[in-house]
Image 1 (cartoon, each protein chain N blue to C red):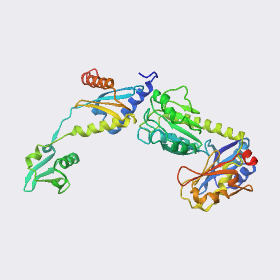
Image 2 (cartoon, each protein chain N blue to C red):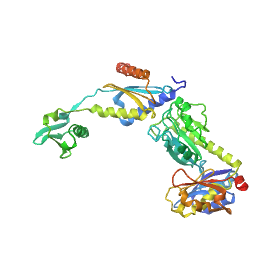
Image 3 (cartoon, one colour):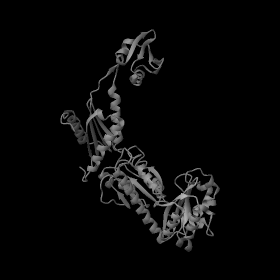
Image 4 (cartoon, chains in turn blue, yellow):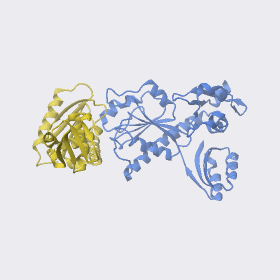
Amino acid sequence: MYEVLLFDGGVYKINELYELIEDVGGFVIQKTQVQVQITVTLAIPEEERPVIEAKTVELGGKLVDVPLAGTEIAVVAPTLGRHHMPHPTCDIAEQLRRAGAITVVMGLARGKGRRTAQISADEMAVIEEYDAAIFVLGNFKDCILEHKVKLFEELEVPVVAVCGPEIESLPSCEGLVCGVGRKVERMRREEEIRKLEEVGARVEDVVRQKRQELDEDPLFVHPAEIKDRIAELEAVQESLRPAPIVLHLDGLRVKIPYEEWKDQIADVEVYGRRLGDIAEISNSRLGGSTLIRIKTRAEVESG
Amino acid sequence: MSEHDESFAYQNFDTILRQMMQELGVTRMVTDYRIKADPDAPYFLISLRLGRARSSVKVSDMAIVDPSPEGGKITITDENWAPALLTRLWQEYGRDAVEQLTRYELIVHGVPAEDLENMELDPGEELRSKVLDAVWRIFPEGFKVRHNLVDDKVMTILGTEHDLDEEWVRIAEELHEEMHHDREEGD
């Protein structure tokens, strides 16, 4: 299984690191260079970590775990009203970003209340595009157990629910963190920071679980391997959006319009095959983006 | 009542109300408050006792009013009151009648100076709207159906999602009344 790490160091002899990563069968997900400093997000087979660690020491850099790198996660609040925003929703999103995830914060149109709380098919479809969803819920146990739970019961992506009261278990979600509740201030006290770390840890569990499931029926190629090839497309290079290509666990989101670019994307060559043959390319619910879901090895070979 | 233990919610609402009042600078304005909620019903009830009775300030306390051929002329001596005064004048006489000569001087066309001198401004109004703001900010968002009981000393707000039950209104009225009386026992 691949492990995602962040190298933080200088550019001196950095090519040796790139070569080593390639030699051990890993790949570079992202490089960010600021003058002579560079941070490299890399994915390597788990068992090769000691070799990379040794190289990092040799280059005078350090290796940081970024367990959520290569994932895109939605943090969902019942509404975007100040009752749920910005704290603690944004604090949780920030915590996940620190662990390497790309996050989006989303408010439902009608998620407030009890009997009136609902999620639309459109909203569900948007959430399904992400690798995992965090639902940030409120204070009343009764509300959460009887009503809010239906917001995510039909979602197929793994869900982590964050709520205030202590609840032993909640149906339809893969993870549960209690003791957060409503906040009107940033979560910066010691116990609150610990809570944020707990949320991070729970999301990591969920993501790890999903990675393991994917490993049982492995993808034809790792999304990062396609990333470089798609990055060569003119529209991607010209894109001014902060992260024009975002990795998912089982594919990528490319932030260029689907209708205009679907054919060029499908024609990208990956290990002698057309991308269109080894992946499903579809329009994203968020305007101006294209989703690529890579088929599994079995799917490609049987097709 | 709800079959679940909602102690976390009560504690949390208590904390966020305190923090919110602090943020809005009205902590001293509220001497006591109670929150009652039954998520099973569902209703949410909050009652606050306002610290000081509303006292009004006369225009002559913060400005000098002189008669002039065009109307009353006001020279503001305490600028802190300027926004409130201006708002009040606009409400009363319309924007066209109020002319701002300089930062401190105003002419209200066609209004005798005596009328202006006796006009009263209500400082409680602004503070009350701040307290209300704090309440709206913590009130559960989905509880749009509301019933308010407001007087000079106590403000009680009851909210629910669908129909208001008379029973809850009665509870609100009782609490509203109670808040008037147990001033000494406090908290």
